Length: 193
Image (cartoon, rainbow, N blue to C red; front, side, top):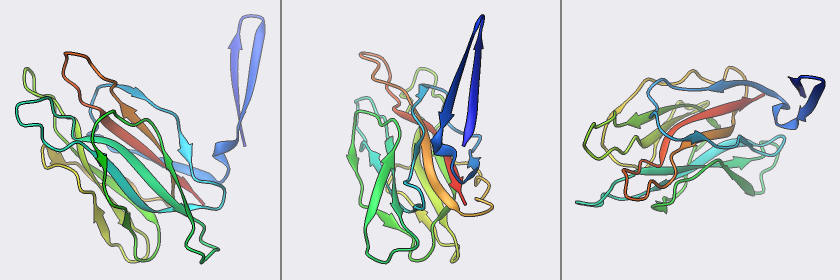
């Protein structure tokens, strides 16, 4: 466990953060969108690793406001169990779109990722993140989400040096009313041993 300490004049607050059990690193990329706030960190149950994912995508709106990628959901499995049971985790999720079918690693677990992001469009319709790819451990198979094609792919993140992806935190812009909505802008993943 990690001990967080916040010092306020004449007061010290201590907080235990149990999510760091076995966590060895986090994975990030440099091309995420600039809008929104970071949601909560969500971690698979202890001993579980992410072996699949699905994404929430809003399809093209024609002359309407596009948001593209709205959410990412990890499918966590227990490597010591062959019963086929899984649990899911997700951080903040945008308001629009539908969840796509799950993409699973045939063997192994999610190990690194890459984002497809549209840069700021000035007076045009911004969408920020449009799609995501993951690399599976063992086989090196790449799984691409069923997202949209606006923008370009950035670089691969580092790989989990030990273990696999076991959690995430997303940066999502909330509804802008009559303004330009972008929904999911960026994501970082956490590795567990």
